[in-house]
Image (cartoon, rainbow, N blue to C red; front, top):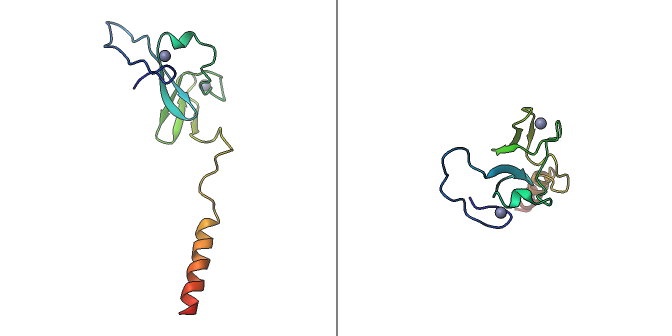
Amino acid sequence: MPCYRCGARQTDPVRGASPWRRGVRSDAQVLICPDCQRAHDLELDACSSCGSTTLVCRLGEVECRSCGHVRSAGDGDPGRPPVPADLAAEVEAALSRVLGRS
Ligand SMILES: [Zn+2]
Ligand SMILES: [Zn+2]
């Protein structure tokens, strides 16, 4: 996975811990290269409990590596609602209309 910000590719890890950082941005796991870590406009998601940006995104969940707080991915963005609840009802109503005519 390249750096989300500049697109740099992670080089083969030298001995020791990788200088690359993992984070979560808009509920997506991202990697940040050592250069971009110095930038101030990373806009990483922060833990709602402790404010740490050391988050890990798993299937449908975002876990804080600092305090262990877990939230469902998508909670932090009310502008993206899930599938409309009345969609199934609309489909059913349309189906019964069609079936009712035949
Ligand atoms: Zn970068
Ligand atoms: Zn936390």
